[in-house]
Amino acid sequence: AQSVTQLGSHVSVSEGALVLLRCNYSSSVPPYLFWYVQYPNQGLQLLLKYTTGATLVKGINGFEAEFKKSETSFHLTKPSAHMSDAAEYFCAVSVYLMGAQKLVFGQGTRLTINP
Amino acid sequence: SAVISQKPSRDICQRGTSLTIQCQVDSQVTMMFWYRQQPGQSLTLIATANQGSEATYESGFVIDKFPISRPNLTFSTLTVSNMSPEDSSIYLCSVEVGQAYGYTFGSGTRLTVV
Image 1 (tube, rainbow over the protein chains, first blue to last red):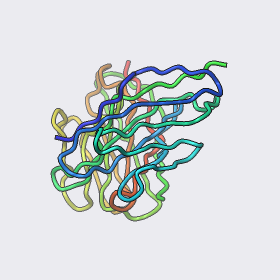
Image 2 (image 1 turned 90 degrees about the horizontal axis):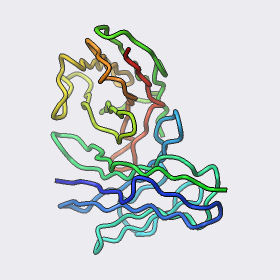
Image 3 (image 1 turned 135 degrees about the horizontal axis):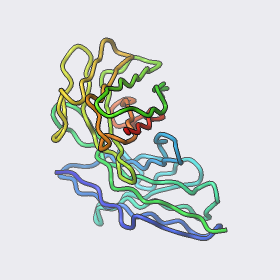
């Protein structure tokens, strides 16, 4: 069964520092992978996705993620953190179950930015 | 991508009552999904709603507790029935924007049961 594991429920970085949020997946077939961000009291916004092709995927707000099949990972990075990046981040994998493509989410990582 | 209007955005309800959440999409979509996000937790899929057929529920969720309607290709409702404080959560609807092209989410309904 497909699943997603996010390492670290809470990550804290200084403003201007590198952001690294870790995500590992398990999938018996080539996965479709997603990163979503949830700001306080808001819904989910798609940051980026990997389907096929280039393994380094660029998203909105300066984020990017690299699909590494050998490591079954899809870590999210941003070179320089900004205060506005403080939010909850969710990694997800798309799976085909019971006749429909569905998203399975990791447990989330809360990102805190220190001034 | 699709734009989803979800309402109400928040509500405080008495235990034992029911709340119906509406989700309106600005384009026709085949599948609509309903999720629950309990406080401090990740998202859990409740059910998948396909227009013209019964919703498909995930393990741990039943139709009597979470009845879903899907009258057309742009609209769906989720009812949380006979509520208890344990139902206090954020409920979100979602649609798939083309196969593997990502999923769009509504802004969520923050439900508090007292």
